[in-house]
Image 1 (cartoon, rainbow, N blue to C red):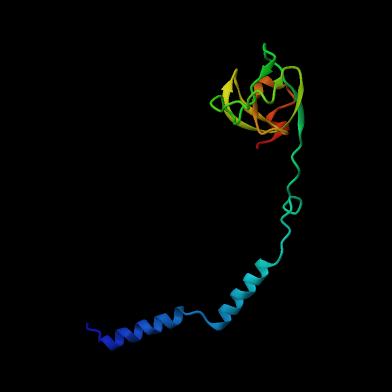
Image 2: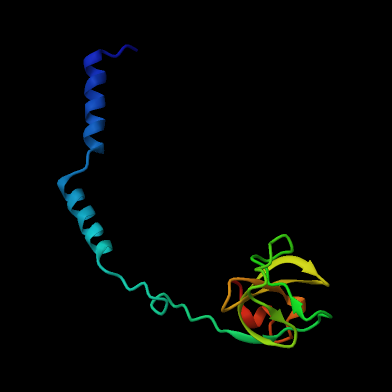
Length: 136
């Protein structure tokens, strides 16, 4: 079966006409864009989020006077240095936890709420549980 070139071109033109958007399509698209560009409330409350609770925990389980507070949830992260001391027996505010390197069977690292550093959960009292803090 042979097709002539003019028949083939006619079929192609018909198909391209079907795919072309109409003026009505363009108007509908403009309405959607206008609706999306209106100011939307993106505050945490409008999104259904709550402020993270801070839990105060005491540093325990260390024979030394201080424990390291590291820049991330693991022993390969550097400690924050001697400018901030995390002293055994003192209470500190913790805001959340991350999973990381395990120590003495504890693989959670609590993040201080006031400083961007982490203490292994082995060194925090029982108030600093994963359930109490929530993930970072």
